[in-house]
Amino acid sequence: MTDSTKNENTAQLQLIVGMAMSGTIGLFVVWSGQNPFNVGFWRCLVGGVCLLLFCFARGYLKLSHISRLQWLLLAASGVVLVLNWAALFASYAHAGIGVGTVIYNTQPFFLLLAGPLMFGERITARQVLLTTLAFGGVVLIVMPALTGIHVDMLFLQGAGFALLAALLYSGLTVTTKKLTGIKPHVVAMCQLGTGLVFLAPIMAFDQLPQTSVEWVCVLVMGVFHTFLMYILIYSAYQSLPVGRIAILSYVYPVVAVIADYFAFGHELGGWQWLGILMILGAGVANTRNGKPDATRPQTLKSPAAARSDP
Image (tube, rainbow, N blue to C red):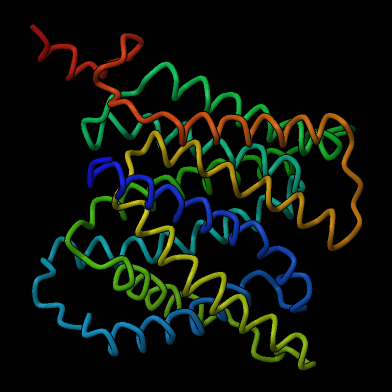
């Protein structure tokens, strides 16, 4: 096994673990009793402080090598991170969690499109098939929430917010991949710092956690779901091609629905279990894909790549 293969396998494991961690955050949001924007503020504050202390202890705060363009990208991506949270929460409020979840999970398709456009990567038929399979699994998982939908202006606004959130998250992923040469810990720290400044004016300080359990949930979201999670995810983003990232992103909804099942007793029907199996199957097939994309006969080349071939 070559060093590049080992690094890619490590990055895949980091992304799977990070997405699994992300899938449990909904439980702690509910248990914390905080509104979505307060949750974002606490994640930025607690996670940002942890990252600052960690970077200081490891000597990562020597930032003279960061260019002006990279500083601009760091600041912009911090704003995008917070806007992504806000748009997703707004979609849940306007169109419901089921619709918001389905539309938000179109973001891996945007990532596939970004591969050839932003990084010169090739999209393979295998990647498109596995991403479509995983997306179909998401639709089956949230199918009960999609029945009896009344389409009105409020619903369309919610759908628009979910689509905006998907685009913003895709942009965040692409930007993070562009920030090569910067430790993922530093990337996350700068983004959370920007998010903290952005969220502080709308933080509801009159709605602080009231019990020790709620404070513990806030700390868990800051340390576990932000500090540790973003280190894992951003490390993976900088090492994996976007095709792999797109498919493995679907670990998140699987863990979220299973966590909801065990924590709140929300029953899962046969179609939902089928959806979970579809997503897991796509993920396993993706991680076992060890051959270089360029050697595969089913490669779908970007227009630029096609013109450069003999």
